[in-house]
Length: 472
Ligand code: NAP
Ligand code: MG
Image (tube, rainbow, N blue to C red):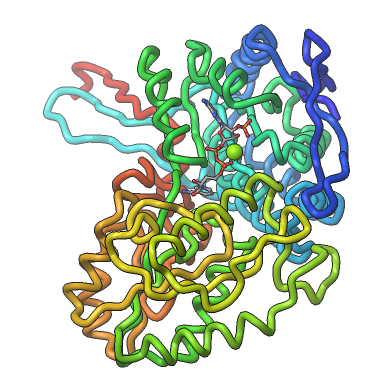
């Protein structure tokens, strides 16, 4: 596939391409261009023109186009989802859900933009208005785990706010994004307004971060990449929105419904093979129920079906790549070497597959209990005796994306939820809970800003005061 610059399929100016691999069988699905810094500069110039054109349309004109775009995504849902499952190894049903969410996000932000009103402020002499204007060119950099859903979460509000958008997908997963861009342009989004550029983060991502033509960058990715982007954006005062990594904990109290806790744990950690920013990554379990919880968890895990994403009975597919699975294996092996006990799993097979793994005897001083984020189906279980101890373990991470507390005592659980140092706290669930309305975002090293209908549209706009002096 080629990139889309101004609606035109575009190769890299030096002709270089990279392979996109199907992680299930390591076959090459397609190639995409490795854009050069000059290519990035070129697409940003077109986007600057697009920002003027799109910004000069009325909110209603933009909304009508975005409603068509939302419909087009549903018409093409199957094709986009097939590409997404091929490049990610994600079960097809989940890929369909991602496209559906992206469509809802385009529609919802267009609706919201139509009802975003300004203000008139009090003044004895003057007429003071507050209005909103688009930022200009917004760059959306997405990770491999949810390229399509996050396309919706970022480009949806950026476009509804009147900005031009340049998408830079992860090198592992550019195909569904390219095709979705084509669909959106065909549905009526002007070709100058929406673009996709491919290539490595270190070249293309860096050129985008350094460019004075960019007015904002919205990244979902790792904390280290977020810091790198912010450092480069600082030179031009480019706005940044950062949805970063996590090592979320869930506290399971002694009065919890253990079967419910096990079901929540499985849903939270198996979804997308554990490659989810806000998946529960630390299970902080009261010592009095730790054995029962672990045994029931292992039993449920052994009944899961792992395999082909296009087989509707598969509960879980593979990881994004052979190297990602090897990294999970190394992290688990190091944790076992440090004293953890492996109750099931602990094994990589068929290159990119990793068996769901339950680890006990995990102590609070191990890296896995603090900042070592494992992007795979691994369940480390850390015991505790008092609520204070549980909270101290949960909050000791430098990350703070979300958290959970499971208990049959709502008052006790609420008290704990209030003290969870994270952007979300879910009672009777794990932290992995996100709706399109909620402001989703992290505390500490998990990011800056939030995504969701409540706040993101306004974040994608400037606030401007226009004053008529001496009116009164
Ligand atoms: P990643 O390695 O940080 O990459 C994310 C994106 O940034 C990719 O498109 C990547 O391009 C690009 N990139 C890499 N280096 C860059 C640079 N120097 N400048 C600009 N862009 C650069 O993350 P990932 O491995 O794809 O995803 C996993 C991470 O994302 C985890 O830490 C996870 O927790 C986090 N995540 C967070 C959320 C959230 O909402 N908070 C959601 C999902 C995932 P290349 O692919 O070409 O390197
Ligand atoms: Mg990566």
